[in-house]
Image 1: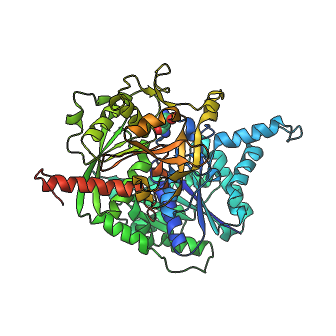
Image 2: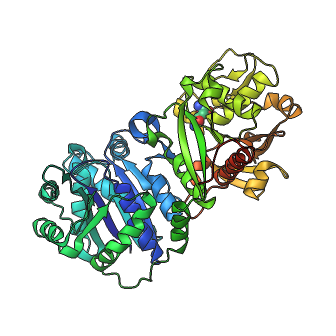
Image 3: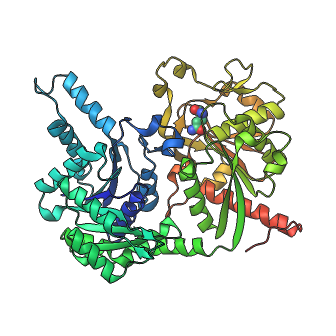
Length: 546
Ligand code: GLN
């Protein structure tokens, strides 16, 4: 029987519930327990696949092809185990299931209501992973802030689960904010008291309060929070700002969050936390020996969350290389053939980001050209790989109007195109290649050298593909299709023969990079950029090691 931990948030959004939930999960996992995390989001979209990255950040994709909230990325990066569709549920999905059942007549003429029909479906989904027998503990993060109208049915479901289960099988951890008032030079507990009261009014009483704060909480303050929130002082946990999210598990360990959780859940069989790999990673991250600048060429660069997994994969790869990776956001719409060398000056490597639609693609193509001609380490992901193919077609093969049919449906050289079987599918969502696909890698290629494997599995999220009708022209001129889908033969990896590091991948390697398993392409790319920087330094161009 699994036990359940619910994580709610109060006072404001963006407190980092996902990081707290992931850190707690990491500590419990490090003590030998089998843990998973799931997220319940209160919005009506059935999944975040249709959400604009500007609004909701990156859409994270799981092995089974679910388009999910970016917090699932944190869960995987911290726990190093894959998540699935079951780990992310939205209000939209709950309602869709209930409405489908209603249409099929499953409710036998009954009036279908929020309570009990919607709440029952929420409860069923909340217990789904726990019922598989695979986990000792299921941590459920509730999206949104306590008091929001839309999160009410989720809170009610938690209340009912808590009522149904033995007391020691279900606890609620409430994350709140303790603001610091500069003028009064004081930390304030009132918003926390209010949010706990609000949660209690909805019938849920938190067992542990985790307090986000910019300043340390003294014992007196902790006692005050404990008294007014009706928990013991040991159940008030300080979550002070950390220099990196990866330090939060260590801070939570020192605060004893895992121990109080284990105590409340009456779990007495657990080991000392094994965090050796984690602390080595942190040590290397905090003590870099070199510094590099990577240009991230994208169109959503204003919003950091839009490229969340890419940025985190660089943190992992930077630690492996003991190298500080400074990401320089470069808006692709601002790059053109006259300013490209100015815009990309000082970069030790370029990453051309994924994306959809035509905005900013010409700038991306210019950036690829610059990296190819100047032998600058290059890494293209998804649309970034497609841009590398188009650039090569235009400037090496001399096909001036080469393009992707996503941006130009009448090009005479559709080097990136929809596959025949996709064209028949009318519903856009149905044509997306989503989730994990196997890929076989050419012996002796850069990709092989990076992965040290023949067969890999990587996650996809795109519609357009390299057009194999042109493959021989590319091969004859020096672009190597070094990885192909094992069944369809679709090109998944391209590289260049006469370049120190030039790789484009149709899939999203960033989604599989974790603290304990940094992604090999990111690790190699950072190494190549570091070598590039050191070579420049040796040539007398100033780029000093730190
Ligand atoms: N727009 C491109 C496609 O659909 C690339 C998508 C992406 O970069 N994720 O094929």
